[in-house]
Each structure stands twice: as C-alpha cells, then as structure tokens.
Length: 431
Image (cartoon, rainbow, N blue to C red; front, top):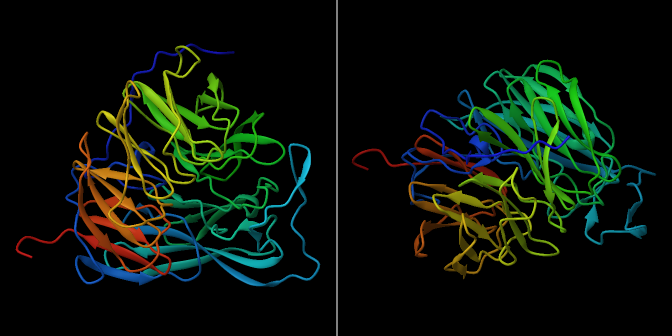
C-alpha cells in the first residue's frame, strides 16, 4: 500500500556532544557545526597523532565512547582452483576488465583505536579465507564503514558476513546473509543504526533486499524484497517531525520505507544509472544522485508528486556523496569540480569550480561552521567557503593518499590515509 506523506524534512547538524558513530555522522548529513574544528594543518602542524593502520581499507572512521573503529583487509596467496562467479549484465556474459582478487585468500579485520592517544586498543580477525566475488583494483574488501552504538561495533563485509563486537573487543555475534554478487566490483554499502536495529541495503546481483537486523543477536527482524539491480548506495535515515523514515536510492526507483518494519511508504523514479552516493535530505526535499554512466541529481518532495521537483544533470562524481548545507546543495565531480545548487529550486548558484591544484576525489564532502572540506586522493584537503561565492580558503595536506571520508568530533578531524589514521586537532589557546 502506498501512503501519501507530507514531509517536513530536516537533516540536523551535529551538536558538540554528538558522535560521528557511522557513515557520514548524524542522519548521514556530513555536517558538524559548533565543534571548534581546525582549518589549517600539514604533516608537521596541528597533527595530534598519527597511527599506522595495517592492511588496506576504504572504510571511514566511526567514533563512539572514546574509540575509533576501522575495518581493514589483507590479501594472501592464490587459492588453487578458486574462481569468482560468472556475471551477466542485461542477459550477456559480463567480465569487468578491472576485476581482481576473488581467487585469493583474504583476511578481514576490525580495529579499535583510542581517540585520545591513537593507540590501537584491539584488533580482531572477523574472517579469513576465500571471498565470494572479485573487487576492482581501487576498491577493498573493507570499504563499508562500521557502525557503533557505544556498547558494540558492527562491521559489514557483505558476502563474508556481519560481525558484532563488544566495546572491549569480545565477539558478540556474527551473521551471514548469503553470497552477494557485485559484477566483480566489491562492496560499498555501509550499515546504519536505527534504535536496536541495524539496517542493510543489499542491492545485489540476484534477489535484492532491505533488512532490519537485531543488534542484540544478529537475527533478521524484518526483510523486504526489492526488484532492484546492483547498487552501492548507503540508505539515509531522515526525520519527519516525530517520525523517522528511510530513503533508498537506486537505479530503477527511489523508495521511502518505515525503518521499524520495512513497509514501503512512497516510490518515485530512480537514477537510471549506478547508485553509489548516499542521499541527503533537508529544505523539505530528498536528494539522490549518480555519477556513472550518467550524471544526475534528482530532488523529490516525498509523498507529493512522484515526478522530481527538479533535476540537474552535470557535476556528480561516481563515489563522493554530496553535502546539503544551509540553503545549498553541493556536489563534487571525480576531478574535484565543485557545483552549488539552490536546494529548494535547483537553480544553479555556481558550477564546475576547480580546486587550486589537479585532483581526483573519492572522499565525500563534509561541512562545518560555514566551510566545506574537499579531500583529494593525493591527500590534499581544500577548505572552501560555503555560500553563493566560491572561495578557496586554504589547502592542507597529510602527505599520503586519502580515499576515506573525514570524521568530525569536538576539536578534532579524523582522517584515514592509505597508511595512517590522523588526528587533526584545533590549536589550543596561545598556540
């Protein structure tokens, strides 16, 4: 049954006491106002600590209870006779030329790092053995960001399982939901928390589904089938007055669900392209987007007309998620071109503003205190003034590649590089 909804959406910014405990922080907004965050750093300035993180992973930091949680992966030897699954796309045999590693032994781990000192408090091996599918070379088997509720941390490795650990590192439970083909690209969707449920968007080869998993024991509380093709977008929780709704972006459709039971409430058109960026919500709208093969932003008023309120068809990167900040929606291209749109009307404020140096961008946008952070794969972070006039305020660098998105906490930006986790802190008074 379709329920007509009159949404008054608000993607609230994080308060100083909030935790960036899952992908993109509170309500996946990517916003952290009022946290007294630094705007200037280098390899030798305003780095409180840096810690070497073993292995390889693209997951972003998740913060809870004074700990930072990361996932990481280690690639081993070829397993004799092991072959990844055969893939089909539109009824034709499909082989991704960039696929690799599905025939090798993989070790997948969860790490807890002390937020104050940078010391690795514990390291646990979640899975060791063969993996179901390939990944592309840029991706890893540890790309989904963990979710933490202060008592436990939940790490999602898709076909290789979902794992829960107590705060002190003791295993709580593990669960498997079957093999999940990805056309040889690897994982991307992160789990999100809703009360005592962990929500998983599983748009996969075969039978796609959305599931609510009990944080108590890992059992399926509800499961909703989806007639949807492969996607990597993480779902968005948004507030509607006293209610919370769940938004899923996908190729064929944009759907709003009740997160408590998986009931579909509203359905609109999809992106007609690969769904990777996470939606954002605010200004009475929901925004979904795709950067490949077509570049497209769709703005909906869920519960109203099913057609988009407006759309924009430029400027979106394949992986980076946007940020909605104030009256403006900001999207970033793969080459770091920044575009600003009026969130209510879709009117172009500015388009394709270049970074001060050549860049490739995988990390998602974040915003705080009138500024945007654009972080490149080279490890440069460009501090941009938010608002209708584009201005680059600073260029900072940690001196190593960065693919993960920043996490914001009171006084500190946590940034995961290719080799290290950085604590970038605001200078104390008098420094």
